[in-house]
Image (tube, rainbow, N blue to C red; front, side, top):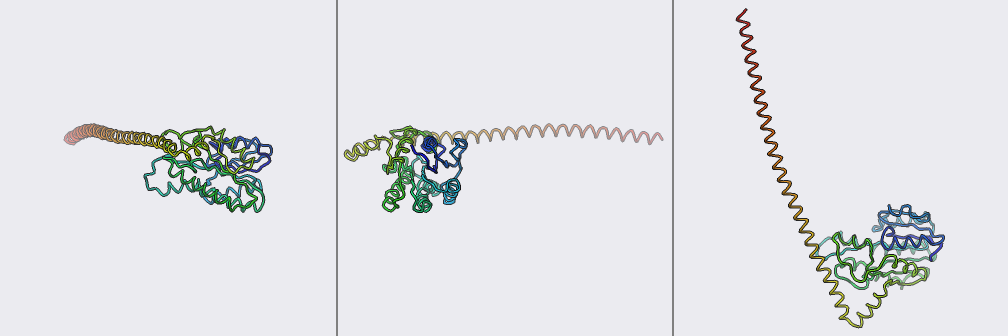
Length: 321
């Protein structure tokens, strides 16, 4: 168990981060700054947990996070850069901002965090933890942008280990697909998860243990390590596996097409309904206007008749005089 540490944990409100938060909060003497974009579900998590909303995808956000942590703790013993998000899609579009958003969160932010943390430690001992992902070592169809963001982070941690000062421990997590809100974020349309899938609680326990033991990497799924060896020795095995995942993407594309067709059909039906409703309203308006005009004409006639009678009465009175 990790005890008596001051800890910053990003991506703490859901998934692996939430399960890690549960474990770290149990540690004797631990004080935790739990960070996420939205922290409503962890606001009153425990007495030793401070929930703080922060967007770590920007330099300003990361700088503010370090200032907040230094105000609370002074020194940060463990910084776990866990925040990240995926896309599941066919990469067939030109959208700079969409790509940029993922790399700012998944890659640039943790890289910048390393530099900030080294400066913060100033020679003192510290632990930096990253959630990299198995997909940062083996690319998957449907995850082109996500996989590339994780490959970049994996490349950074490999290189920086050869440069880092001795006072810093770096522990990286390589989970396979984890049964979390991760897949709901990846796409609004439900899709088949890649094989295999683990529980986030299992992943969190192995990561916390790995940090405690000073491990460089934590691979919570033994099957992934075995499959890498098997695929290296027998390339056709990898081909078969990736073809299975490509088939999932093809089924998803069909499902997505059907979903978009339904949306278009619903939108067209809504437009047609709007036109019909507009036509009915216009017809009703014409009826109402016609009725009002008839009433106005009737009132005009009645007034004219009364006016004529009044004129006749006046004439009669004048003649009578």
